[in-house]
Image 1 (spheres, rainbow, N blue to C red):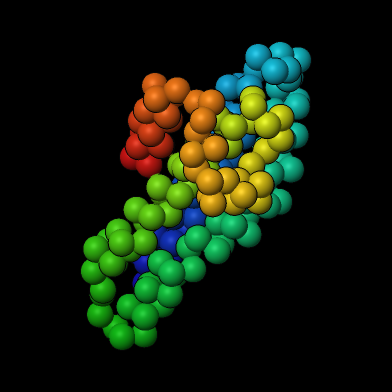
Image 2: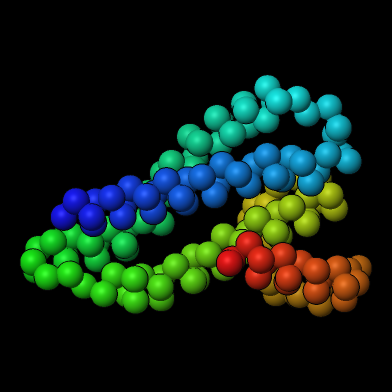
Length: 148
C-alpha cells in the first residue's frame, strides 16, 4: 500500500511540475514580445498558475488513483503500468499539443489559447492558410518531444 501511495504522490508531483515548468518556458519563448519579464514576474505567474494547476492535476490523476484503489481493495497488485499507459499517452499528447499550440498561436493572436480555437475546427484550411509547411513540421516535432 505504501508503494501505491508513493506512486500516486509522485505522479501528482510530476504532472504539477510539468505544468509549473511550462509557464516560465512560455514566457521565455515569448520574450520577443515583452523582454521586461523579471524573475519576480516569472515566480508570480507560476504561483498564480498553481491555483489552477493543482485541481487540473487532480483531475488528471483520477483514473490512476481509481486503479490504485481497486488494487488495494482486491488485495492483489494490478498491472498498473500497463493499464495506465493507455491513459498516460493521450494525456501526454493532449498536454503537449495544448502547450505547443498555445506557444505557437500567441504571437499571432496576442492572447492565450481559449475556446477560439474551436472555431477553426470547422475550417482547418483557413487556420493553416498563412502557415508554412516547415512551421507545422517543427510544431509536430515539438509536440512529439514534449510528449516523450
